[in-house]
Amino acid sequence: MSEIFCARKEDILAVLESAETGDCIMVNSLSDIVENSRELLGIAGKLAARGADICSAAEAIDTRTASGKMFFTVCGTLSELDRSDRKRRRQDGIDRARDDGKYKGRKPIAVDENLFDSVVALWQDGKITARQAMAKLDLKPNTFYRRIKEREDAKMTDMKKAGHEIREEIREAAKQSRRDLDELKKQVRAEAKEVKKAADEKLELHDVERELRKDRIRAEIEYHDSVKQLKKEVEAEAKELRKLNEE
Image (cartoon, rainbow, N blue to C red; front, top):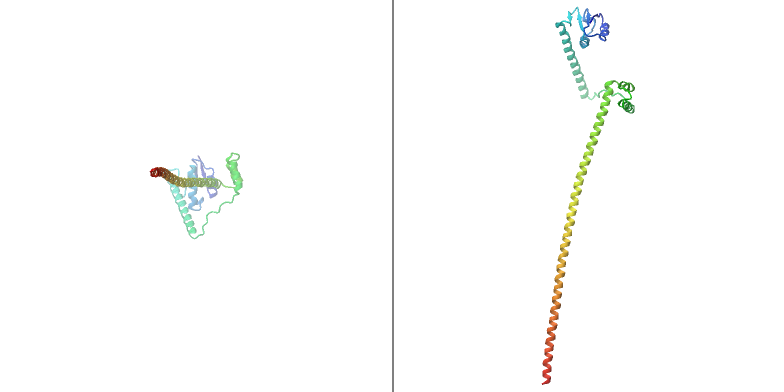
């Protein structure tokens, strides 16, 4: 814990890198170390994050006191409002440019795809560290990990698409199989109907042939009976003629 006097902006910027919890930055006036409110909000936020305080003689600010701590609270609130306002204005500008057809987004960093794949494979195999992989590709951490996530998302999308296509093919094959089975059933029913019809016709023909055989047999019997009767009649007439001749 120590008191560090800063007379210029360069002094406070150097102190920010080494300030520790309990340190207090002493200044004659805030105007000596910042040029605008945005710089003041930035310095206050960094000091609060490190647990350090600031005391300004001209503005009677001492963040070691209860009332002085309100300075950090107010600065934090104003800083958040400033970030939100800048983000909103930036988005409004992007929306207007997009509506005018002028916004095309941030130009992607050109990376050799083959080199990227090989370096990422080495990193995933544990042969190099992530820092070494980023150095080989000349990429920052956020870009490096974002590219990896985009690759993984693309692979997952391709897998989902392939799975969907396979399911559709299976579903279509099942539908075709059902259609083929229905057609086969129709053919079997039609063939069975034809077989039954042919069997019925054959049975009718057999019945007709049997009746014809019966009729032929009856006709032959009647013919033999007629011949026998005629023979008897002839024999009777011959007998009568013999009697007449004898007389």
